[in-house]
Image (cartoon, rainbow, N blue to C red; front, side, top):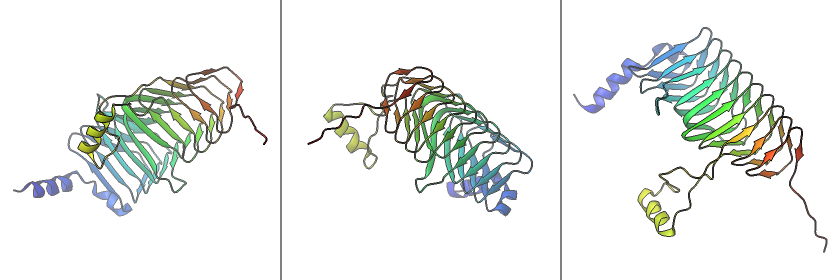
Length: 265
């Protein structure tokens, strides 16, 4: 029997046929588990659970026009979506643990795709709304509390640890990064990697410089702000438009803005 025939037979065995009536494809590899609660609707979506991963989806969720893939890696084998969750237009590829509580909204609202890719753990409380992008690498940990709102085109990028408290308002185009994102190699090394992995640019084999980012509760972060590695915001901090923070601690109840200077000619 050819390998192609074997793959087709395995797919037919692993396919959950009842979701075809909702125009969805749900595949659970042998050894993996998927539990779906009552009144949950999976519409025009694709869900894949592989590598002995266990996924639990709560009651009364709506998953629409999504692609959700779950794999086990770095010792992580459990993921869960709480009840009354709403996922709309989400692409999620999780090599690790994705856990969120009840009443969370993940929604693509702009023309920029909502890309949620990670290798590590993403742990979310309840009653949050996310329209941003996540990128988690190197088995990093991201912890987000309750009643937070993160708007379109904002980007959480973690290679170590990002922690966000409760009741935060995070605007558009906000960068929250705990990492330099890239290493600086010698020109000869960068050329070697570029040629070897072309057309994939920027390939690296080691974690860049990182330092955890922590955001407290009841903070406001304005549009185009950048909260970079090693930054800590205590509670009730306001970060002004286009403000850049790097490796600094902002005390409780403070408003911080970049210095603006004008030159009149």
